[in-house]
Length: 292
Ligand SMILES: [Fe+2]
Ligand SMILES: [Fe+2]
Image 1 (tube, rainbow, N blue to C red):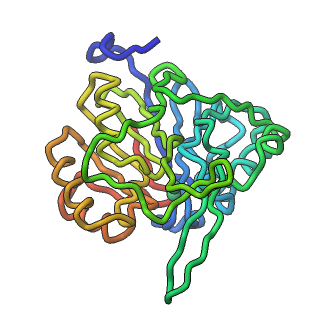
Image 2: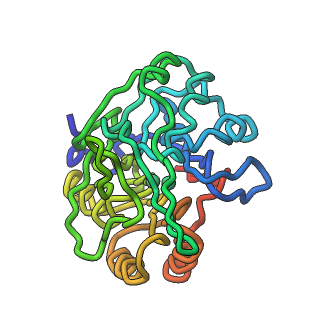
Image 3: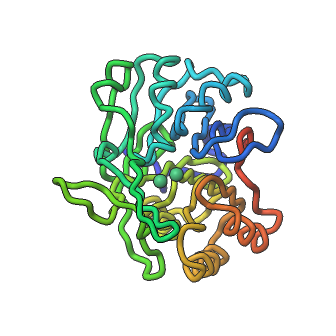
């Protein structure tokens, strides 16, 4: 049951703290950086993990940041890329049996086509573990394809309709479907929405379906236009300068209080966002927090 539209100001929405556990950079002399993303969400109704990084830093950083992964109520995976899902076994070894919410396509084989110095190489970048192995460690997979309320006030976007003309897929990313390599559609790319008294918080994995497409879908599904924060990977640095600028133009017209870029946003795009959004911008490195 959706609660959107039924909530009035001061209706006792949950309190929460978001801590970036895994990210490409370290900013507070604590933790280890890696190519990946993971965010811990502590609330007064339980603790949740959104993505798990690639596996090198999630447990280590949780210990350094005094976060106990044994308390996790649920895990959410944004998509099947190794840098978001590869830490799942490490988390499961600490947590044991737990619900893992994701789109069924997380198990597709994924490749990254790299062209360098006239050479073309293809690198496997999908979820590096079989479903049965993850289940043997305690993962109880719960799959969704549509917008879903997973806990009171916590929602997964489900599949994102591609509507904007300027948001193009990354041409170097492929998935293997029935033995054929096809441009990755990223049906599994989903984001997490938290309902707070200051507005929605949107947590992104890599935003492969387009940051603006995702925001439009969230507005459409929730009927809410006020975002307290948007945090996570935006993939903006892997795309064209035009897509970055068009995205910024649309973001400027939206009601977004804070933008916490991280991970696949990349430095160039993060600098542009910082330039445009000033004090409203922050970088989501390992140990960054957002509290309300
Ligand atoms: Fe990523
Ligand atoms: Fe990704």
